[in-house]
Image (tube, rainbow, N blue to C red; front, side, top):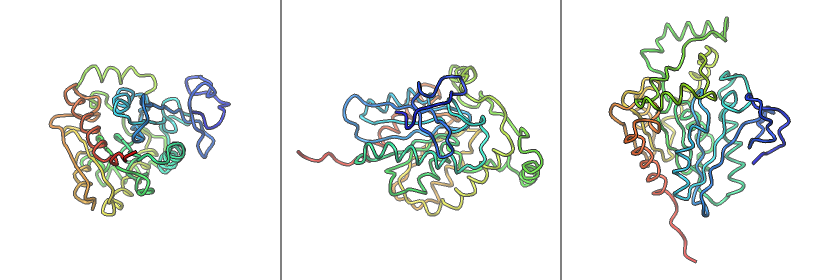
Length: 300
């Protein structure tokens, strides 16, 4: 479903003319995935992946959703997976939101009468929240898996934040940390898949990118009391990458009347790639939540 003929090549050397893609406002090619149900779709689901990931990691989730007549679409963010852009180095977090709205508008134009849901994980959760805050009237509901909502206060101490701000001016490419794959899931098989996936960014987090994430979280903190749209929060109690307290904060502060939170005891960060029993439960929660919010079928 290309929006324009790709003249360039992906970071893996594949011509974009051979890949489904859109071209964003900066002229960069974003690799896209589309999962269509066999029959007419009942709703649209836009999947928003996390930092360092890529949208094809959600293939099994998307296939399950299509079995319930849901049309699923996604793209690799700028600097991720098969999309163009410097690897996980973003000048402005708003670019992720702008690109998400562009893709949403494209698919909504082709399916104007279908409700749209957003499913975001980790940093994709932050993107999902801010995207919906910009267009709440267009979104039927948001599902958040281990979302990035607030910094872990033990990690983001005032002193560390101060040092990061100084480094951001002096050495913005300074590496401040890495994602430990073992914190992704309790399932060793899923950890191995993540570690060996060549499309996953395994490099370090630049201080400049970290500052953009912090700015996004500050914006979310401001937005929380104004949120009135439906959402489902799913989080692992032992998530060391995105603080579960952020999900509790959102649940408690948002004025939404249609909201639900479920915390999986002992689970790690990527609930959809957790131990099979947990992952299955998470998928069922998502499917049930979406289907319960679809409009009732009209008569002939």
